[in-house]
Figure 1 (cartoon, rainbow, N blue to C red):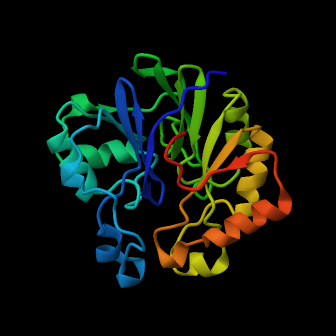
Figure 2 (cartoon, helix red, strand yellow):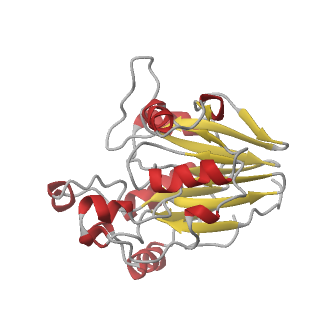
Figure 3 (cartoon, rainbow, N blue to C red):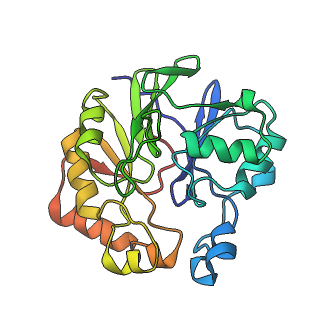
Length: 257
């Protein structure tokens, strides 16, 4: 396994910017306050965006896991498309439909593949299904929500998007091993969140077990820091890690992957 490291900037929620030598990739960037404007002040950002959408001019690819507003945001995507004119976008069918509706040229929009696809020299991507909260497919049999496995110079990084554990996901990821780093959500599904129309994902314990079963070297929790009704305390994450001593390294908001 190569020792190469990839500079990373975490954008809040599930968003991350990855700076590969020949390619800058954004995954699920959410750089506005659209959710609060749509869903009310309780869903205001707890932390400011580290950059404005209008300032993003370096994006070569934007990978979008699904069509929920905190992952696929017109106030983020439209400025990126305008200010980074060579940027291309990838996402499942509901995402692609939105991108077309927002005026992005079809030539810039790509469907995720169940096979390896090249993004740049030494960098390729493979889509895997996601269960949010269960696995659903379109009429062509493609998953409506996906995660992405990125491979650069022999090291694999898995960004799950929003997902719960599911047998089909486990089966797909078994073919992707070894995965060095996994970015997994830890904002659990529960009765009170679902009563408030918040679709949660893995619990913290599920994410730890999922990472253990995958055999990853590093777990990066995501989807825990941005909205109060959907948050997990940093101390919860760190305490469970200290108590259970799982066989991976825990990394919160790392500057490189």
